[in-house]
Amino acid sequence: MGSLSFSVPVYEPGRPEIIGSLKDVTDKGIGVAGIEAKVGETKSLAIFSNESTEAAKIRFEAVCTRFERQSPKAIPFARFRIREISEESVQRFRELLQDLAVGD
Image 1 (cartoon, rainbow, N blue to C red):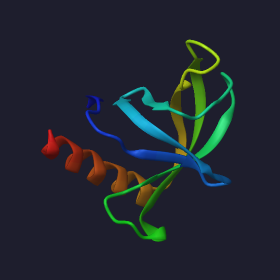
Image 2: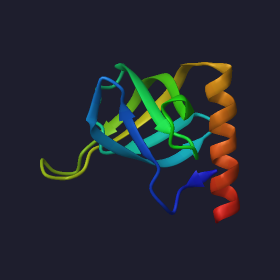
Image 3: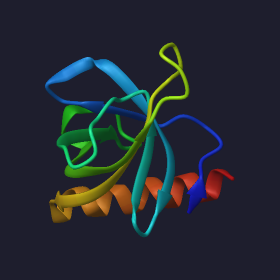
Image 4: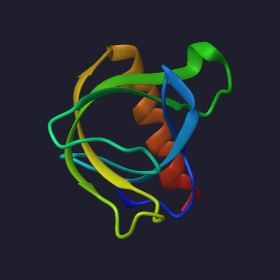
């Protein structure tokens, strides 16, 4: 899939006030701007699919494999490897990626 040309919100369900943005998707994982993490840290993350209902969230556990921040005031960027995801969330994620690909 590669880099995304528009914003897809990503957040930690336990901290919904912090909203990041899905920046890229590869076979190795996802890149997210706006969410801090330490390398090796596992986070619960969620993405809204193309539906806006609570049940339409894509939820998964992911391990941070890279973290960077260019300066103290810069937006953080983290790369995550998805470690655990339900079949239902996998299907929603595929649908979201198909929708994004059609929108390009």
